[in-house]
Image (tube, rainbow, N blue to C red):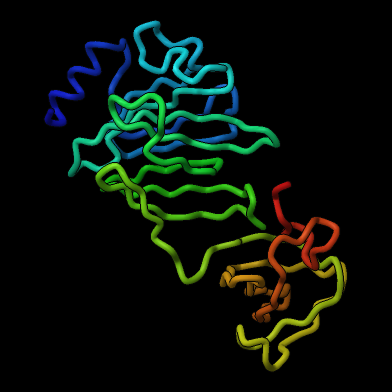
Length: 235
């Protein structure tokens, strides 16, 4: 079925308007945002309140925890239509499940994030702090029912915070040649991170404009971190 016929068919089934660009504040979680620059039909409705004829009405068992966000063609070069469902799991874990047309049991893929941004051409940016040290943005490509992360060398952190203990920052990410000694209580900005297996290397800017790297172990709790707002958000 080509894209035009598919969209027309959907519009007959649901009394919803087709949009090409917009932002959704999820109901009942308006602080969670989904934006899109692709053809989409907006639902933003709990699955238990969907039209009886909708394939996701009661499709998930306990539908009170599921929201059908939208139906979308994320890649204009493809006819793959996805239903995107959101669920808030235990511990406040946010996830988005992507179901290809005709599938209501097993999602094609799942993304754990707070916010989604569909940019067209199959590009998706997922943003979230769950199981991360900060609000991390990841870029994905959706093609032929699959999703692939387009990994970055560095990830933006952009946190204005303060030191919880004394530590040094260094000229290079190899942690050689100290640039400055940060003191407990000193204000600073965390600019970006270079991820490693056990430790991450963060680029720090002091209030005097000095730049330097520091190494922080992954998964530090809030009472362990050397930087107030940089800690593991998870169980």
